[in-house]
Image: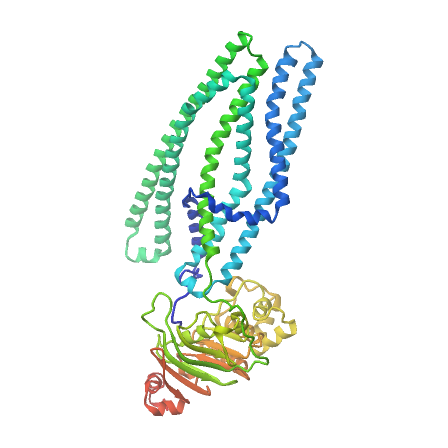
Length: 616
């Protein structure tokens, strides 16, 4: 049993856990807070700079498509002024050809802009995801004691998706609308300074209520989602425990509570619908009222001869473009703020530094490896509980090739010994060494390369049986994989699979039995060819037949290896070269089974509980 539950936030593999995680991530995406500090988005610059060619092409075609959009209004002006008023079919055809040519250029530039900006966004997000995952793999166990695995996954999925939307869409929309607004405003001033001033004075009156009511609608939307999330959460909770609900006869109560939650969500939704309906009517009234005023003033200018009909058409088009750009920028600003908030969380993850890292000049581990393990006066407490040391002045020396069993009550510190040896944590005092090298002076990767571990519930992965065995050593040949499976008593059931070693074993190898998974884990440890083997309750969850097979495989695995075994069932450690009894983080006894049983200490009490009068 582990001394610390380092996987508290991990997906537990129960039915519905994956669906729950996806639902939680989707809900989190809707509730992501925004941030006004957009400077955090600057962290994306190196990712964009790495693909500057695509960024330059996207910017070029963005300018091109914006220019073509504005040119459409000029072409429309020519259609009215030269085509309609000239009374010439040829002139009319020419102006429409010009309008069509501009439209073709606009379509081509827009398509290329879309391609390059989308490709850039996808590429940046792909690089960001890889950088995030690479960095997360470098973090130590202590980080995950304080951070839930679900939160890390949320940052790698939900938050990165928000960034993807901004880089691939929002930035392009923002730049396009800024350029359109600036270009349209300049052209408006050239077409009619008087009408431009009129529009600029009227614009705040039209736009301000839209923003105010838009904010109210967004607020009600979030509240509606919250109420609906409450209803869904209760439904999921009650359905997951349906047997308990039915056993206590609480179906009516559950139905009533869910109905109340749904009605609360419905009430909020209707408030949102009413606010949105009012906003739509107000927007239509204000926008079309503004357009009508502009047309009215422009029509008087046309009648007075101070403005042509084509210029009025162009002015209306430009006004609509400018107004649309302002509205779009308001929406995009909300997305940018949301992306900024997502980038803050991603930056926090990228900025996290592992406490376990190689020293500036690591000492090389001696070759060939011997497998000697030494704990010298080691004291260690897990982060978050410094007042409760898991090890207190712990001393242990394991000679090369020796098999040592660690036994003792739960919480004695047995699994902590293995975690420290793997350098998942560093002790507060004392020295841990392998083959005479202090682990603090060595590269953790080189230390772990000398260790193989089989735990009570060793995780396996989706893929084939051969893939899972090769996880121990990626470059292992098929012959080595088969030899390891044979030594682990796994070759028989693997060959019985439809595709043998190439047969997919499913997520976490759920298609295999517990004994089969454990033998596959032993094969993975064997193919590693490591001089040190760690066994943490490797057979405690197995039935008698599977335990016999696994014990036979372990006997092969322990040959010529330094082995540390943790087991609560003392029958599995009787043949160890030495049994080390631990209590409250210290070594209290050590010796063979017979020596310790005769000594009458803690081991004798534990043996008496398990073996009765035959303990000796």
